[in-house]
Amino acid sequence: MIKTWAVTDTGLVRKENQDTYRIARNGDICVVCDGMGGAAGGNIASSLAVQVISSKINASYHPNMRDSSICNMLESALSAANVEVYDLAQEKADLRGMGTTVVCAVIRGGQAFIAHAGDSRAYLFSADGLQQVTTDHSMVQDLLESGKITPDEAKHHPNKNIITRAIGVDSAIKIDFDQIDFSDGQVLLLCTDGLSNYVDNDEMVSAISDGQYYAYDRLVQQANKNGGGDNITVVAISN
Image (cartoon, rainbow, N blue to C red; front, side, top):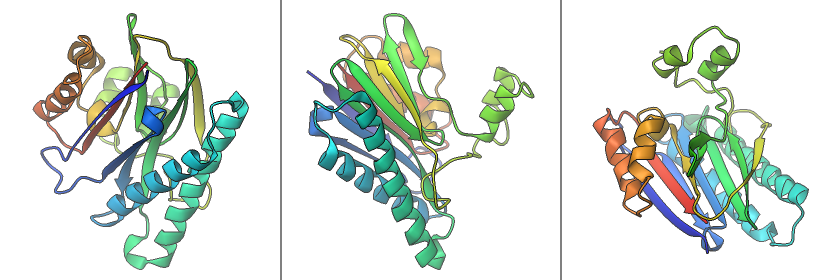
């Protein structure tokens, strides 16, 4: 039986929380978005994207779908959200440039199907430790992959907040997919960069290793303890 927990927090610096999440179908579908683009725009972008994505998946998903059909469904849902956010931004001058990162997961039969754009992440926690499943779409990730900076330099890079893909910024969006085994005793963690930028892997493992529901509150508390410079959202799914 799928169990889910979710925590979201404004952090210590931001005036409002522009992160949005949705859990549907008893935890089989989870979506996390991190809005950007000004006081109003970021909140609107993330809320609209979560609404469109969860609605599209909910309407299309059934447990007997082929793996390829689930990936097609996710791509269609995220692309639809991209169109909705982009069109709204074009219609309203005060919303120009708004957008949102997204990471979402569909859980089916011992598998997790994950789609993302931007630097919101998915992690898998198991007896082997913590594994980052997604790869950021960011300037720092590009520099890291090209060998121009080291992993240590990436942690504190001044352009850490510049992302290279986001829902609603352009008329079309490229989505990345991951399909992983997801078995009993494992935890799939979806989060915004307000967590991953402020809590390192060892701290995450320390916080969630006892498997208790309050572990995810501890993650948020740790992010705030380490600066809390952004909104923080964590959705945890256990099988």
